[in-house]
Image (cartoon, rainbow, N blue to C red):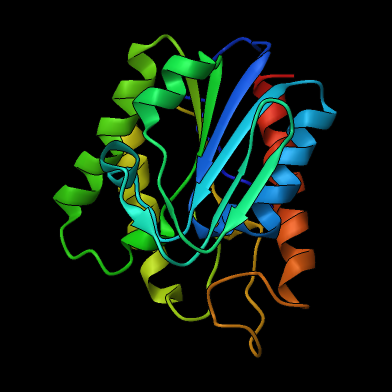
Amino acid sequence: MKILLFILGLTTQLHASTVLFIGDSHSVGPFGWAFDQHLRDAGHTVGTYASCGSIPRWWFSGQKTTCGYFSRDLKGEKVQSKEAQTPLINDLLKEMKPDVVVMEFGGNYVKTPSDDFVISDIKKIVAQIKSTGSQCFWITNPDTRNYRSELPRIINLIKTAVENDCPIFESNLVTRYPETGGDGVHYWNTLGTPIAKAWALKAFETFKSFWP
């Protein structure tokens, strides 16, 4: 299956020695664990932080998640809990000084009626990251059984907001949620985990085409 990418002005490969990876519930689960490990195995210094239910706004407000949190710091130490404050993006940028910030967001916009809000929310975090001199890489939400009809709208809003600032990996093109089982959204079950791992590998392979 062809993966649509926006090279978006990045004409040369850059080496990323330090990578900050943030995301929502998909990154709390098997996708996030696998993507984090691929980055580390490739020799990058990595800090991963994922907050279930989050959108970029949470990473400025520190909103609490009550459905799952995962982190793995620069030393590889993991934290997993049901409830936690969402880390502040400005603190993470200051502490880590990442060369690249990977963001996995989109699914939690499906119930947001305002397109303008979605676009401004995405633009704010991308602008903050770019203002520090870091590069960025956006991973969109994957296919879901429950909200499949909403995917084109969300993907188009992400593309509109990100514009030429980050390469975009379109996760819905490499995933297909099983027609039975699970909650219709998360790839946390027996059938979903292998799909999540394959998704993580494909996203990582695209990432390393920009930052080997």
